[in-house]
Image (tube, rainbow, N blue to C red; front, side, top):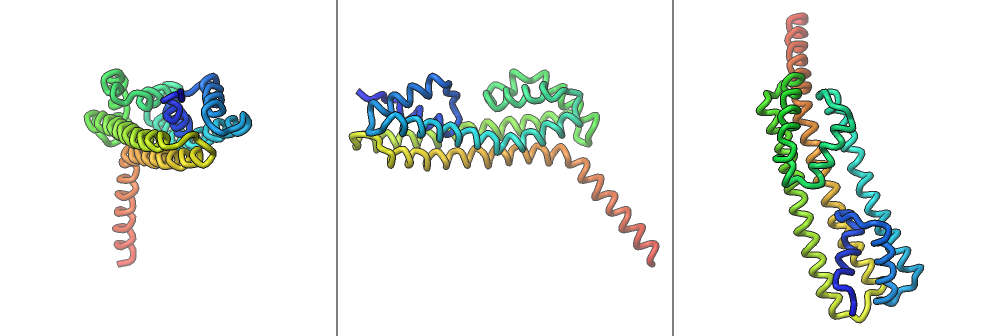
Length: 220
């Protein structure tokens, strides 16, 4: 009997939302060969390609994450490792982050208030809003993924085997989820960055207004 979790494992490997170790990858190759009209080489290529696509997804928003971490390092008295760990905890379990990281959030909010215009309460809200954005993303991706997996499993019941054509369909569906993950994660990080930089923007606007007034006085 075919492993009922095969489609789910293949799908999650390709979107990168579930950590699948090397051993799991080998298991997937064995199942693809055993239950489908695929050679070992084809099975290996599918798993390799899925892993590569998953890594590309991570690379795309890691750049935005590094920009944000560098900004926070300038605003906070925290090392890059501490900030990285903070973001890792939010990304892994956003539903628990607000409670588990309360002391750290309070400390970061105080530091933000000391070095930027937002008050402590506003600094805390900025961070909590970011956690909410990541939580909303996680729930959306999980729901989207489950719908796709259910659809693929329903289709699979009508087929005798998952050939290469079916694997390509899984890849196309996976791309939908990867694109959503990248776009919304980047937007959440950019929003946090913009809100932290708002004080600098306000200062520039204020300076521009003063220069405009000075220019008017000079030429009038």
